[in-house]
Amino acid sequence: MRVPLIAGNWKMNTTLSEATELVSRILRELDEIGNVDKVLCPPFISLAAVRELIKGSSIKLGAQNLYFEETGAYTGEISSLMLADLCEFVIIGHSERRQYFNETGGIVNKKVVAALKSGLKPILCVGEKLEENEAGRTHEVVTEQLKSSLASINNINGLTIAYEPVWAIGTGRAATGEQANQTISLIRRNVSELYGEETAQDLRILYGGSVTADNATEFMQQPEIDGALVGGASLKADQFLSIVRQTSEIKQAR
Ligand code: PEP
Image 1 (cartoon, protein in one colour):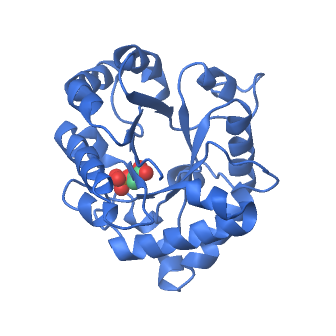
Image 2 (cartoon, helix red, strand yellow):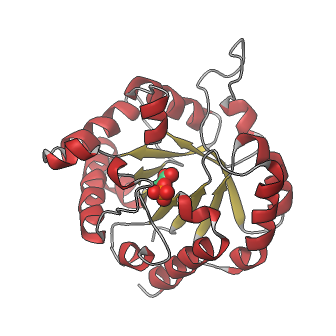
């Protein structure tokens, strides 16, 4: 059985004091929700403070990005070695990084390699753009992203994949549960071809894109969906707690 995972991607939101305030508001209730891995991904500058706040709880910590070199003259960058000391998870290949920071499949691949090498658990994001979706190219695009991101990686132990259709991120226009389930099932088939059926069955694959407390149930009821990467709604204490609670209840009942 795959333990579901809900990760909150705070993106470039919250100052240090806002981040600690948000954690303080959700800490106790979030800690008490069982049967689901709960991961908070605040901005880099708040990782250390959030780490202190969640110490001793069941809540886990993730970063939103890394640079693939371990050390050196890369002004402003943060490496896997630095993060491995601080947190357990790291989001890699988010569509906003691909779109605004020109991250190619090759760069995403180097980042996944660096994360796995340092013992971090990457949450690898893949997903098609609106025009690709409308042209019926979803499967082709997602398969290509998956293969380029995982090129030359023999062992994906620790990896989570997030299927995030670009047109659904931050738009309020989520995919349907059925659409997401279908694409996630294709991703699992691809992983099975690359790494074998056992690895594919063990792999957690999340949905991301305008998940809210109102639509979380629809996604979590789908058998192939193992949780969610949540952006906007993860900044709202009540919304995030509700999404995690719904996930726990639905997946436990299965
Ligand atoms: C995300 O940032 O990965 C995301 C899915 O954002 P939102 O939930 O706001 O669409």
